[in-house]
Length: 213
Length: 167
Image (cartoon, rainbow over all chains, first blue to last red; front, top):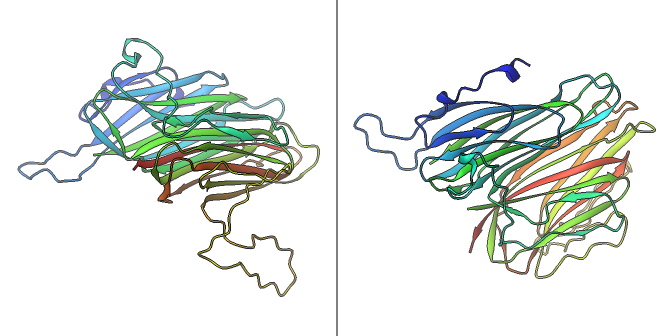
């Protein structure tokens, strides 16, 4: 649990990269970056060269309200690849068996008008116009939950789910996710990460590495 | 490239299933998908046993998909004309279940399996799959995602991210 007590150091945050830190609504965040793409000495700029930047973020608790971490693109770029490690573990022994879960998502919020820099909530991802609304075929009348439509510019979405028995054995969930979003991000756009905890008390850690050109 | 995502969760799977589907509204190429599937118990089981969930994604060409009117809500697919029938060589007479042919436009198929002990320890199953189908989609096509289940009852969730290029 040392990581939960670690201080947030905003000044170390991607000062030399195309991505700038903007904020965090809960948890602990620590960014490191980056191997930027610019020329070294007199060498010409290499076409297609990339930069990388990474950060970590952890939240703990059992609330059903989401927490956000976000940062602004300081210049236009292509978000080529994303590599995210997400892990959930129970953080307290359970009196009885219970489920523990988290939904981790990331998306691009377009434009400067998102309001986050003036203390507003990060904007939710919006429904796309390239696909229609979801419908459900559910002859067994199962309980369900779903997004009413595909959400534009969401490039990462991952459920972490575990069962925590009274003894806590195997009450962990983890996944590594490498994707190639190849998303165009304009200067002033925000990259937003969210974690929604559910179930018994647990702790989620995200480790993200972004490659961009 | 462009990106969209949606989530789909079935809370009380127990020998049944359901499907989520939506239309494509413009011509595009479905370049990539990244799908996380995970199930967990929501209560301790009455008895130990196996649990499994089949998760699939497919394209329905030109019209909304038609699903089997059974509690499993299977999503039938057209047999591919590019491949022949599947044959099984089974000299020991093992119990075998298989598709008789290859399903055209099926681009995602995952089976989650687990053993569930009485206290539920270690019974979660999950998988993350990335694919590059590069499938051409036309306005009026549909994408459909299916889950069906057998064994001890579970709650299963799919989180789906699609990367596509507009044409």
